[in-house]
Length: 364
Image (cartoon, rainbow, N blue to C red; front, side, top):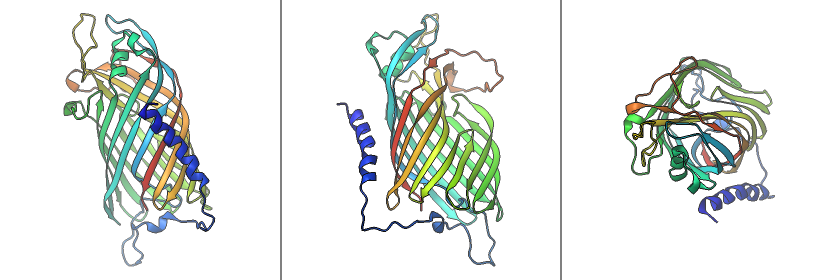
């Protein structure tokens, strides 16, 4: 059995084993994680600022080690120059995901968090040796990888108002670690929101973002809405259009979610073997896959011990975009919803079930 399949099996079996082990000698007490917040002064004489959290919200993940698995589906690579359209079957798309988000400043009037992530996407083709289209050949032989840095800044303006800023820089492509691609191919994202926290159970904000979540560069409005019912049973965790979930809290150690996430970025291909050619048979290695997908899912999160939690996802991946653009010298462009820049390659994917399991160190 391949190591990746062994790792997947371990992830799938671990939740069942952990959930079945209950120590009858321990009385489970409901723990309110909001008691650990340090953003409010208790001294009434000091100026108070809006808290970054609300009651009942799921614990923020500081470090995540996970495994992502999509079941089989078909991909049709569109006509490109001398290469005709070709449909291939992909048995599975899978890879390890490692993320970290660490607070570096945590004061009552400022919270700054720095993060990093490494994602690996492996395309396991059926009959890979028979493929002739260069896009299929590239994906079958070279994983897509993403290495990114990010930062979140929460700046309270008063007891109820705040500003939220998110920044990210990503290196995405079929490069081989440690032979990274040039920095000029990096893709940069960001969002700025202004909002209010009218109560301990509600938080909302509006803003604008520069994003690659739908694959290509776009500028879109953003809405944040976090809410918890008075009895802490129901809630929402929304940063639309990036993600939106309804939360059901069994108890502070067991949470269920239903919703979706828009996931994606722009990936440069041709780093290792610039084999994609145009109609004149000249080498082209300035192509980028505009990968964007909607993941409709159910999520179960449970405390294992202390600040270690397990998260298990199951859902349906819907392809939003997997087209290819020619981006000479890495200088990207904005097409938006109304641009007429032609695509270099139009591809279609069918939609599979997917699973994701992770172990997380969460914040108090």
